[in-house]
Length: 156
Image 1 (spheres, rainbow, N blue to C red):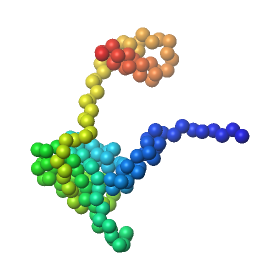
Image 2: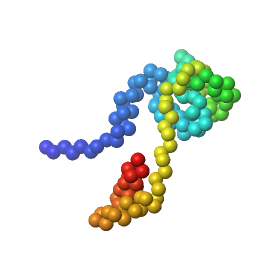
Image 3: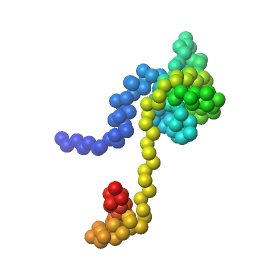
Image 4: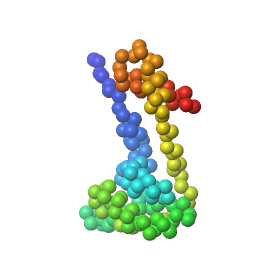
């Protein structure tokens, strides 16, 4: 009996592992945390990050009131985030597809997520020169990718 197993995407396995952690913080899924930059935009994401969603318990689950989104905000940016609260709520609810959040609560603390530095630009000329040295590789895409890799390594 031969069973064939296909590899699963890493994101699928990780989301299973961290689902309980996000659920304890009130997030029904991890998308608000993992896609925060895309949801609110890079300007707001640089100043605040989601910590948890606080849901009010209701006797009727169909009539449950919207949640409060708790944001960690770097000290001096709290006033600016407070003024942008309506925009943040609108973007989060639009992303979720329903009015899930109706209030923000701000917690002043240093941000835990480190902002990644943008990748340095690879010189196309250097990449083409490295790729030209690999005449033995027939696949154009592979040769171009290896050329970019070689140019990045030579740059450092």
